[in-house]
Length: 237
Length: 237
DNA sequence: ATCTGAAATCTGATATACCAGATGTCACTC
DNA sequence: GAGTGACATCTGGTATATCAGATTTCAGAT
Image (cartoon, rainbow over all chains, first blue to last red; front, side, top):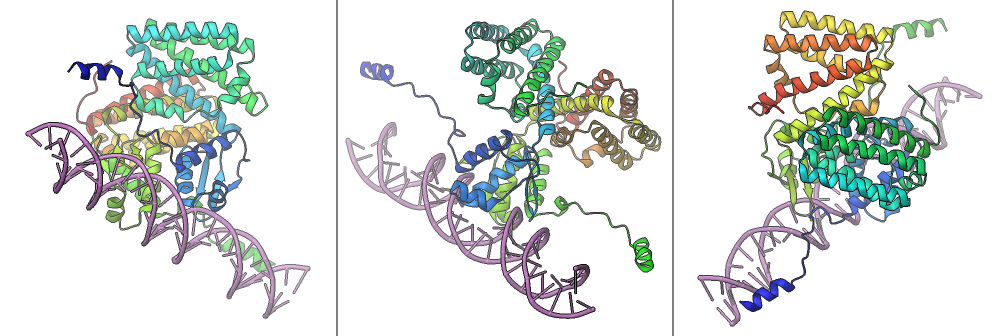
């Protein structure tokens, strides 16, 4: 008995692995193609070929087909039965993805303000504090990670699994682009101020304010990304 | 030459058929399974089996797999590699789908108010007039069709292809449920009033008002659908 | 030179076979 | 009787062959 107790104490605390975590060929292909499209590797209207992709990846067409169906559901390509697969992503598409994310993220911020509790609020404010430090030191990688943590906290506080998943699909820029942005001290400061005021609004339970601030934040930072990825300024409305 | 001219004049004006219109087995399966899930044919957490589905539909597993990947991207099922496919749709999921649609549809209404022009505005108001007539006569089928026309007009005025497509996927009720709703005169009148004021706001170019009205309309009518599909009232917030 | 349309060819769509991880069963051990 | 682990079996994942619509090519007719 004593030994058993000691044994339990010594056992390494292996974390439970997420069943959906294991990497399938399909998932790898999905991410690779998606990322290529979003980074602008293909022109709008350009055709993709299932067999050719299969050959490039060195796999059969089955996982390619499944990945393409997924990418199609995201609206990034269009499948024309027996004719081909055409790229749909464009600057306009990217603009609308930002708007979609702004709409959804502000909705989730509103709910988070209504549903958050003390401990969650404290965590959110703590994250903002870490952001303040990282902003001063200019640690881009840390800021990128904290940014994700920040939005994750809000998603969790909102208790909206579906909305959170939907928002994930509206992201068209990756870490490499984010890093470029966070090199600019002015941009870093703007983002920090916005994050701080959003956190305050949520903790204070001010749903309307949180919603408005979040939308402005997503739209503004989205436009900054747009100008980097597509190299031109969005026309004012 | 003269004959050619006459010929052109006599040629029936066949419309160009949409290449994506033809139906594939995959698409049929996609719609059938999606519809079944949304109508509550499966309990949350229940498992689907690819082989079994293939047998039921009388086809191979390939189109089944592709359809399931699509449905997975909509968040209605979750694929656990080598373990199974689990239903995720639930009342909570439906609530969030309504919120997502409210967020997106209000965003698109805002843009429509900014971007609409004279002829489009006239069409929208004309649609509302037809709705008034149909509401009085209580023609449910006509109302359902006009409802779709109404929202389509707004989507087109907004010039947002991506957002419009995204919104389509947030619909969890079908014509049969809509018909039940439109049997209630009170509900019909409410919907008509909302549609009329939304149209007015858009035509007047009042983006903020159009946005607010659209959101309230989607949330309110969504809750009515919820109570029908899931048979209980949503708790007030 | 232009037009026609049959045939070659390209593409995605579907069917089938097989692989490997996950799960369940149950004889065997202690 | 409780625990163990080999094995049968179930599931989705992947590879391959074949089907059929769409497009292109190009010889032959005008």
